[in-house]
Image (cartoon, rainbow, N blue to C red; front, side):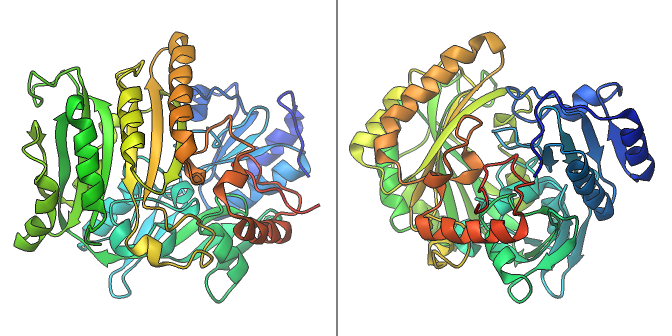
Length: 467
């Protein structure tokens, strides 16, 4: 079992031999691109691996795993590098960087897409849009497909078709012993069950195959109101969510309006509440299904209209800029009660940074119709997932923003019903019990004990093997 600390060392001869046999790029602290290569999306993460090995083929992934084990090095796996906990990099170990593996192959007849593990949702969405199809994926286009999918995968199509992990038909992985395996419902079924919600605990996903669905034009965007209306907006939103058609997925959010010409002067630089939505299609029927949401009254700004799915998928990117400092808390909710709504609104009004946000994802629909134990993804019956996003730029503002997020969390936590593995922060390594119910966690431990008994893949929200 690898157990290296941050002061691990490598003999130069060993590293040279590895670099000669490795077909991709080997980046070390002496390389000119080292600092860029170790940066991840969350600017709070500042880790210094001994080696960053950027794979150019799945065989490179196996070589990295074998090298890590041979030299007792901690191993991290980087796809998109978007995880808020910064699990894509590690101190004093080796990073298996998949960013060079981004190929997407389409089979329109079978309605399938095969995407390499370093692809982003932008890569996948642009490819599938060329044939008028899509699959459930993340709401920020620069997010890596693998990490998001293996943890579950919320997205704009989830109420119609299920989570990203529900779209998988097979996954190719390199396991802890350096072996390449395929898992699906017939082959290595226990592994296929585990990777659909259990995160990166079982191997490195080199190729993921997704079902595709006919999705081209959608009706989507934002309805924006001043924060003073937020309590009434959210209570109206909650009533709408009780009977939303499956073809529509929504989210509510708090943010601070930018000082931009697109916003009315009355909103610029002020806290706002928004309802975001994606409805499949653009027709009179779609407008009819959205109409009950609009009955609250005219928003201060209406940005809802027909667009392409790929454009909608990247429309929120500006709200998640790379290298900002992030500290998150998240949980599932059984309901948006009036008391909880008031707490959400009151605490956001005290935000320490104009970059901070609160996101309330509507779930339900096809997500809830999958049996709770059909995959490793839990809490399918919860109607909402709330994510408290503390976000700012300057290190000197860390304490104030972390304190704000924690105090906000204290107000929300009594309503919590478990959390989402993809949103666990760096200081919640022991929070795995809050993610998985007992029976799900038992099965995940069984799979971990079979596929990674030495816990090689532990730079993540870790599920330890049985001892």
